[in-house]
Image (cartoon, rainbow, N blue to C red; front, side, top):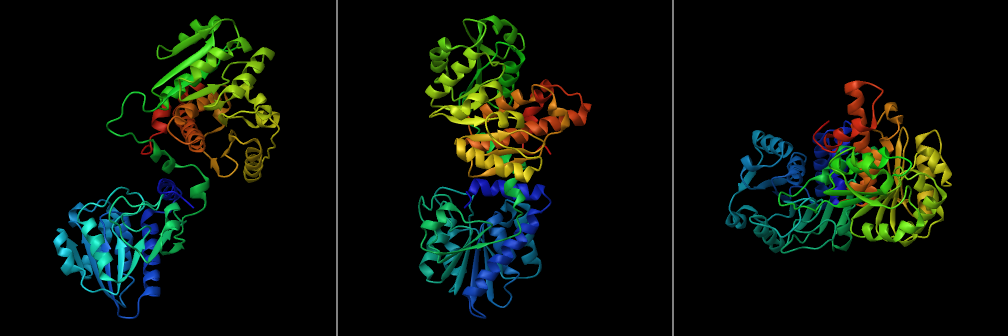
Length: 480
């Protein structure tokens, strides 16, 4: 089962792995044609109703594999408004080969155009489109439903939300659905026969993080301050750089506001790292149980908390972290020394733990030098502890115990101190807008890309601060 958003990411990741989208469209179209051949008798009339995106492109490909039938293709809209290069190429291929390919530029054309087909292929809108159908698709859907032909929808019936199975208005009443790679959640509720076709997307496109994962980070034009979250970094005491790195990384990863709760004794030093930091000092020179109430009140005003950068392992500090986690019920990233209390804490909080392999072993987990074996061990440990784990290494392993991702960005230069603090801060920012697993996966991917860019420019000997300014570009999907 795969959501429409995740499917779009997997498509893009497959392309990054060397499987072109053109190849995937050809495979999808072939799969549609195979399904038509199972439903239609020789020389039956087949009407293809195609939208102007890649869903329509799949059906345009299918037409070339259906020469044994009386096929008409009906493009909803003008050819010059086709929205993707691949769909346009396949439309032009049909026209050049003189297939019966027509355009529907007015909803009234449909009564005449569709005729009396035996099979209708509905490829108006795919899984990435939600909301009520607009014209001419709405009229086309009503016409398809009236004709009484066998209806095959490509990926999802037009007008139906692929994730929920619900329709906001008129929708195609499909008899059959052919979908690709994996079933979509909303299809199970439909009264239709669903076929899942393998189109050659490698399993690595789901397992490994890639540029497709960054597609989730787009922002609406009408965004407002606060829409992308507020992060509280709880750190500092023995160390001052770590909380400053985490906080600056959270800002660079997109958080709207970041505060640092730290001991008053180091507040001036932490503030000195950047004028962008907002500090909330508390009394003393280290976190202790007396500060827990104050920190909890402050954390409740933020979307995500990051516990650990620079806190140290003072006995009172670890006791305070334990109390914080037991009483906190929000989302938190836990890093560094704070990790050691996690396995024995009973908490209602949603935790994203970011250990390196030594810290994982200190938590009671197991590791392995071979990444596949390590991924299995980490997944099992995550299932046992009930938290999301991002275990850092040459291959990072990200898992919630159910779903597992592996990140391959990054390089040996990132063994320098502080890169983990940058990762923790970025994870905190992303957890404001993504699920915990997605936030950890995207943060690992972006943090590694930032490190790769730093090494490409300057060679080894990079600093953790080199990653911070490169994070925005590293989290931008178009920058390869």
